[in-house]
Length: 358
Image (cartoon, rainbow, N blue to C red; front, top):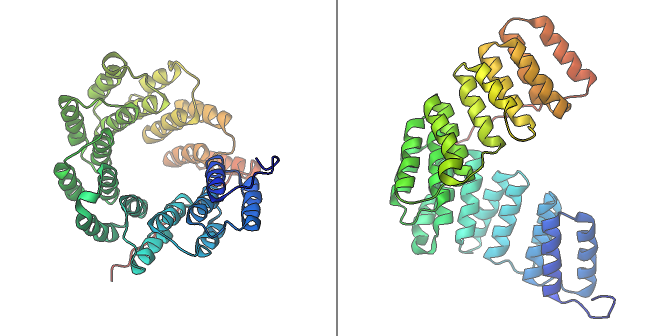
């Protein structure tokens, strides 16, 4: 279009920037940004929103903020785009600050804003902030759709407030497969494995067809509850009753279920019998089970497979080291740490925070 002398307008730039955001192509995005400024289309709202999205998808938080602040006018889409971008950049706290600032300016949040806010609270496990936003969701009433309530369910589950999870779920008039799946995982993660399976059975009775992710959550619940027989039943029903071929995640859940139950041999046999090339997840799962039960020989084999798949991933080394440490085999622990140093493998440090509720 440029070669033929047709000048792009604001919608052209917005479309191109949206495409570059999807491609995460920063270099070309910078060129389009420069051309946009020269063409004088930087003041248009749709262009500014797309420009912010492009920078955020490329993990350029500072540039995204700069583009956002240079917008002469910001509507609810602009603010929501900025908050969602902060969340994508791993800054959920800043995302909530953006939404708070939006409300101060008098811009009414949309359902997309609320869904982003709930996702940020879930990431932070910030129950108090989530409760405040739940009040805003009640105020908006009929303007809210099932996607927002799904995010609300996930937020309460990630914060460990299961009473609130059950209340929200039972009050939902419209439940999608995501609603049911979120509920199953929430119960499984919060010590209610048996309730998670009851919800799955209830979902089937209501005629809701489970999907790939639903079965991951169901098998995870079986693993958390130690329900080996039920796990095999649900695993077998995937293909026989629902036409879903088990993937690596499902096999990893089964390996974890068998491993936690002390059936290390069966877990390894299932691993070796998988009908596709294995990734690191299953081997690390088996290694974790070996660590739990002190099975050195199987653990070594699992660790060898995991390390061969990715020699720079620290988790395999750490799991093997912890297994030896649990058996007071400090010589082997030292060998693994030395291997990590010579291979330039670094353990990712943990982090924690305390929420000030004053």
